Length: 375
Ligand SMILES: Cc1cc2nc3c(=O)[nH]c(=O)nc-3n(C[C@H](O)[C@H](O)[C@H](O)COP(=O)(O)O)c2cc1C
Image (cartoon, rainbow, N blue to C red; front, side, top):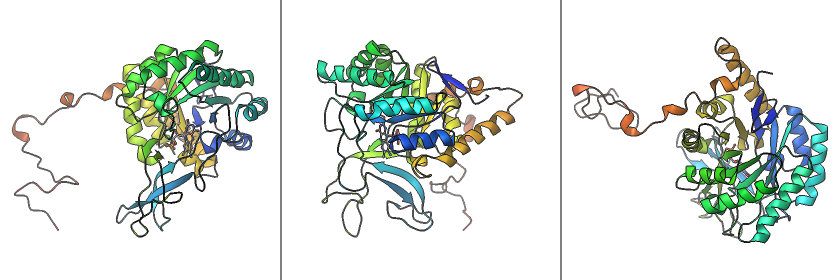
């Protein structure tokens, strides 16, 4: 069991989870995911009441072409995935629908991890009680942990979703309310749409959070089609801010993870953003993350990522084989690159007169004056 990890006290067969999103929107999907080998799932965010999504597509995928770098949702030959864009709300099934299903999936797969993502408002005591009702319902059904959604980017309400994740006071208060009733670990999933995510992470820890999860999608818009002059996703010509996920967000999400892992080296972090293969998961683990979650890549692989989890597990095995002389498990190399992110002024400059504005021709820059460039 070299792949096994213990994260916030929960035993995982492997550190890879499907994140809260379409891959975990139904019992059938989740059972297929466990069959495929995922160590855990975070169930699509559950509210007290079902919600109604917009007309038409809730998610589309940006692709980019190698010759002109045009990012568009239009399918084009030879185009590669750039990211996902969605304006999907939380689960369109409420707590009552989910409770018996969580129970059944835990009965079917007792050694796999089920984390229930939950969401309510924060503007009144009644809303805080709604968080507690959700938490109690899911834990009574057998969920192994809770993930508080402070990160959904398309909420009109000021007291919900990423609007909680942008407010350190609300982050603390809601976490505390959930912790008051929780008998299982509580993770909080933060929005990346904030000035300094360390502030909100600190607030969640003050409220008693057992782990921080990052990133949810980044606020964004679809591009405008130059021929029709319409957004590539719209309803009656209208669009609202949605969320960008997939490869496009990997570097930004790494930066947030690095900041948080440095600020709280002894705390638990679950990483998400642009993972489709072990190499990306490894970056997060080397910074200090203890588990890794996947959405976009799984959506594009038979909806629950059977090949993605095979690649993640195989990549981890190969990595442990390669370094078998030093490391026996993830814990042995987790965080070993945490301290390599430093301030700009700590980075070495060329010594003496070696620096004169850059001698070597560098991609993206004009050749230094006086150099002859081969055509
Ligand atoms: C269509 C769609 C729906 C999503 N729904 C939720 C949700 O209900 N709750 C949540 O916490 N995150 C939700 N997410 C965010 C993902 O869980 C994940 O954080 C994000 O997509 C980044 O991961 P990725 O780069 O692997 O896609 C959703 C993402 C997509 C694309």
